[in-house]
Structure formats: structure tokens, C-alpha cells
Length: 263
Image 1 (cartoon, rainbow, N blue to C red):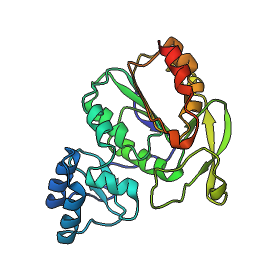
Image 2: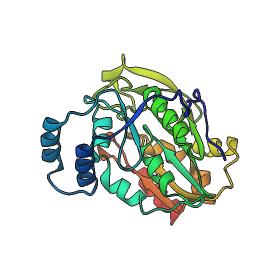
Image 3: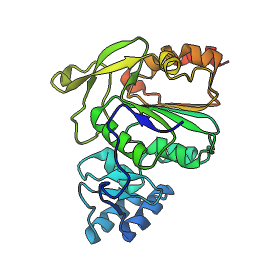
Image 4: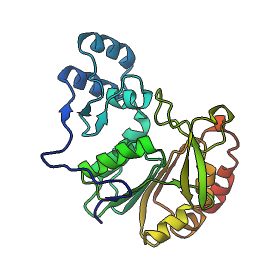
């Protein structure tokens, strides 16, 4: 399966955007942070005094991921420093996917890249990301790196329809947008398409494809995602299911239903 996207294709030839490698002193700090050693925040403070982070530049990190830098965005900043979701990425580095990998809430593509870089030649991926800003970077990266599979600008949920995605212009954390109702963000939302994962898999002719791993990180919307994936969970469960559980977002009793289905 070749990469396709609902967004415009990006060239990886001579006219592709300039991509630079991370400065060597930043590579040292990145590897230190990525390994999970203590004191990485202090190390980066010292490093940035010696060499500032290039702003609004596509930078190749030591792990092969390319990030469009932003000193004010926690999401991109932590990825640049090697501090983003270290336990998750360390685990994904151990996974050699042979079949389909599904990334729901793919953000700008760091988890998709980690899975794809370790995957076997038989593998392919399906990534969903509703945020326009994140999807633009996700789509660019997947095309630039020629990741096998498809990325779709869509959210997974319990029912088909259109919902508001809140917090899409919070430049302090581009990965923090949520489909949960936020009264304090009535002026900061966009309408996004939502489909049950079961229907998405049917439409993409993947319903009967063996699934190696499913990762769900949807800022409190995980219960609705699981409700729309009941057929998959019952009939074609993934070998690995990674789920962000966020009690701060509300009720998590959906875990009881998930336990019953998978038991």
C-alpha cells in the first residue's frame, strides 16, 4: 500500500522545503534526554545558552523524525528536545509491526514515525488526525518519508457526523486540541469530520486485515473512539492496544467495557 493523503502531496525532490540536521551540540542533548537521564531540562537550558534552537525550520532529529521548530509550542519543543512521551516512544522502539498499525490522534507524526521506522516490509499504517495544523505537518512528513499507508484528516468517534474540535489555535501546545465540549473555547474551534473506526476500516477495505498495534491518544475522547471500534475489538483485536487514560477529562468507566470485550 502506497502513501496517500486527503491533503495535497508534497515534493521530496529538488523543490522540497529545506531540511537541516540538528546542530551537533543539540544532538548530544537530544540523545541524553531521549535515554531518560535525569537533569535533561537543566542540560537544555545550558545548551540553549550556547546554541539557540533554529526557529520555524524543518530539522532532522537523531531518531530520523523531522520537526518544524517552534520555541513557543510545548508539543514541538519537547519533540525537538527528545523529551516527548519518552516511555511510549521507548516501548514503540521495541515493536516490530508486521501488519497494520493504526494511530488515532497521530499529532504531527512522531509515534507514526517511531512505529514505521521499526516496522517490517510487510507492514503498513493508517493514521487519523483531525487538527488542521497538526495534519498539515503529519501529511508533509508521511509524504516526505514515504511512509507506507494512509493518513486521513478525520477523528474517530462513536457516531458519524461533524463535531467541534476545541483549542486548535493554542500555540503553546499544538497537540492539545480536544473534541470534548469546552465552554471556555467557544471562539477557538473548527468543525471536523468524525467516523466510527469500524466504518473507517470498512471504507478503507481494512476490516479483515490483521492489526499489529492500535494507539489511541485523543485528549479525553478515548471512550467514544472505543465505542466506535467495538466490531474491531470483538472480531479482529490488535496484538497491542495503547490507550491514553485521562481521569482529569472525566469518566473512565469505558475501561470496564473494554476489559469485558478483551477478556
